[in-house]
Image (cartoon, rainbow, N blue to C red):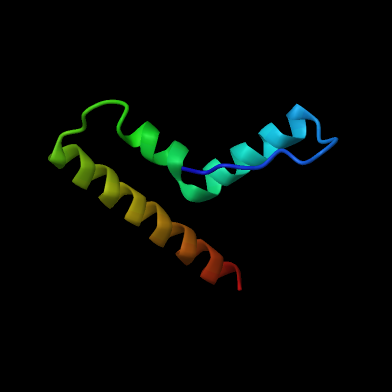
Length: 66
């Protein structure tokens, strides 16, 4: 789990911003969202395949503009 030390004279808002950034970089929020509801293995495969297709289409579009 990510943790931070609040620096002297640092506002709570800036410390919270640093903490949220660490959580984002560690992937904690993404993993929590993935485990929020049960997903059937077939649905996981379907979602992963759709992501691969989107990624390939995006790469093809970028290559076409070059």
